[in-house]
Image 1 (cartoon, rainbow, N blue to C red):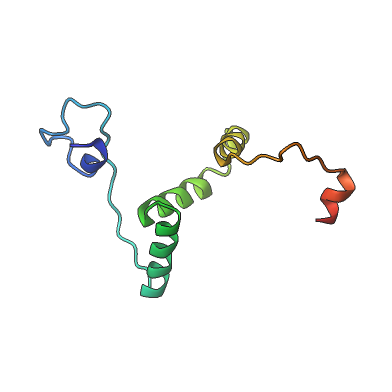
Image 2: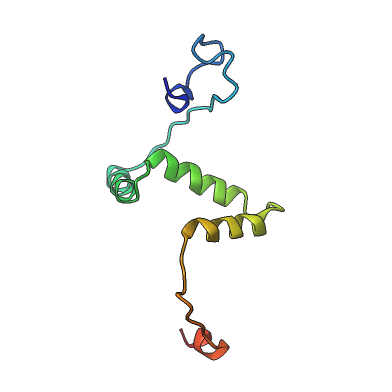
Length: 98
């Protein structure tokens, strides 16, 4: 069984015990109106993720804005995006005109 499938199981569960790569995380309940939830599901589907991951990422980004690692997090995000200018450069004036 994959570790992600076991992440919500109790540490005393025999399928989790002895597997340090499996970490348990608390479950929470959110009250979200149906329209917002549906929009979140569609967004998650289009971006190949889950509503759970969207909420987790939003909380992580919001709660960690004050962290000392913000610059590192910014560079990691830029690396993950994978954008490329194809050699194009801009002047300072062109950037401010955008």
